[in-house]
Length: 481
Image (cartoon, rainbow, N blue to C red):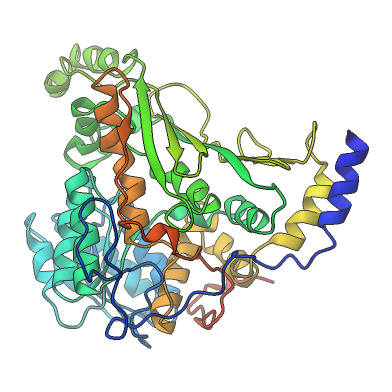
């Protein structure tokens, strides 16, 4: 079997290694010239526009307003400061000291001071009302993502938000319908789609190295006990409150996004239904009670019914593929998103480290892996990956994501992650809650594309028509030799 595997490996390294999409490259659809087909399924509206493959008019400068400057916002300010064509016009947070700290980042980069909005939970609307902003970038607690994004699109801005994009199915539809109506992009900032192994396996999948994909596994397993219970962690303890009021997979998109792209979900296949089950809570309630014994601050949390420590959901697609999605942020386990894809000819698996690939009954060697990596690394990684690792943001994937978003907007290219991806991947949270609450009942998954998944083209990361956005103001210590 090993000799067959090595023979197969030699054969697959003879091809070009180019990204194969299975379709021609994205057509650049102009809103005024093309109307969406009237398609089947729920929420069908004749003449609604298809945002998959849509290219908004190009813009030389992308003027940004950033809302939310707690944990994720400052990193976004710094990363965007390196990207040519970006002007950070406004900063917003309900806490003035956070806005002031973000201003220091711009000052350090030698960039103009941004307008400031703070002091209330509604200050963000003033930012969205500005006429000199093209993109509203949202890094707030989850419950604000949809209201802010919808308001921004309704006021003529493209919008991007941290994950998840929505908390309810109704919010998912609000995002879809607003994006279609306004012809404004909405992107959920799923950075894990831009991690290096995920992009490598996406290209290998498109080139047929794993055959036809059959099954995928993904997760968000991350011990956040200390952070969730920290008084100085999430503002107003918002994330702990999420875990105390809901029971399901509350954070599915980090693992689900990359494997969905490998499976061409929304672009050739579609999620059909899911089942979900949660363990009991064996950790959070006990921690809350223990802390309340010595600190009255935690009395509010000691009698809550916390979600189960481990949630496992299984999704079936229209074409018969399966996806397992897990969520556990309260058990003492090493970090993992799993990222396992399994096909008729081979498989890949990222965690536990090191990442591995197999075409038979054993993993390929490190030397063989390096050959595949060199051959199938995508153009976007070759172009921007090295500097991304130096600039940072979860090992560089955050910077690749931000750079790609800006490059697409500046060149009038379709986005890799559109509103349908945001809605679908986010919908797994409320759907899993519904299944868990009904003894793991099978739950149908809405088709937010309204049938267009059958004609939509897979994402294209060839950099055709783009790739010309430069990097600026990079400190000498971050420059690539």
